[in-house]
Length: 295
Image (cartoon, rainbow, N blue to C red):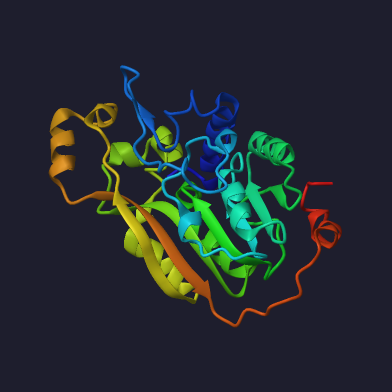
């Protein structure tokens, strides 16, 4: 297994290229794949186009679910999006939390942060900000978020337990998360599991579904539930890059399943309601703290 930093570097390089290319040229990235004949499959992503708050320029086609649809975001909430990319889920969340709330996107790819900030400026969203950093060491204080969302990102991080611990740290008592991700039931063939492209493509970095849910349980989250689950089928054309025909036949007839799941859980405790801040107070008190990168 490659070292954590090497895997992070692979993902960062891939997603920098994605940010430069845009969605039209990007169908072969995380939630799609190309074959040797350059046929393109979008095998994971869900359609956002009918979602309130959707901004096409911010949608790079990188998701594997619609976590904001299940996130129970309320007006005035503070929402954090992990792996925010060009800002798609942040802008959907902002529609839900309103101008009186706040949305923070975290991403470790500088060009993604730049792209997201440009999109926010075009929209005039002064209560949406983007911070550069790793989601396993978030540039955010303790007990900040009412809601955390993420879309097809934790599977790209080598140390998923650390991310879940960070989610627990950053959520307010009584806060909750809704996260879409890729998980497995059964073992992937070695050729798929060890390929860097498949790691950056959201598959090889996925872990067992039971292990994923246990990490959440072990961090003392409560009311854990799978809000949505769908099967991800890898076309034979893609499998052919890694497996022989006999291996493809065996894989397709086997017990291994690849799934997109959207998981909900709550941090224990009672949420303390606080007076709603005016936008000017939000900007002065938090938006321009040293880690925000917005000043």
